[in-house]
Amino acid sequence: DITMSSAACDIFVCKTINGDTCDEYFDDGAVGLYTPETGWVEEIPGNTPADNYVTFEARNVEMGNLWNAAALEALRETLLGGTALIRLEGTMEIAVGDFSITLDFAERDVPVNLN
Image 1 (cartoon, rainbow, N blue to C red):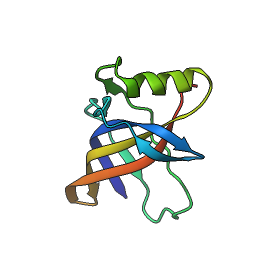
Image 2 (cartoon, rainbow, N blue to C red):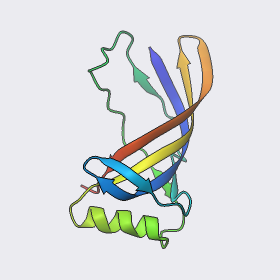
Image 3 (cartoon, rainbow, N blue to C red):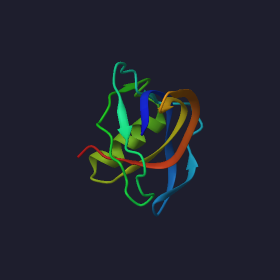
């Protein structure tokens, strides 16, 4: 099994969406942090097939300045029923069996909605 016990990832908002990918992200910095929560654990069972996605529980996001262009655009897009795209960059604490490590993590084109 793989166990994740913390994540500290900056959130960047997409400026130019092209289909389901982002061509350009806002360059005015991170709008928030995923996740300030502590004391949680998520598990991915061993031998999980690559096409069998694992969904984690929703976690809180610590938002920074909501009045910057990136945050306002994401909020506008989701309130109008659309989907905003974000990029996550940071670290995650994971363990495989008894082996624990802090990993650098980056993921682009993560869909976000308020539904």
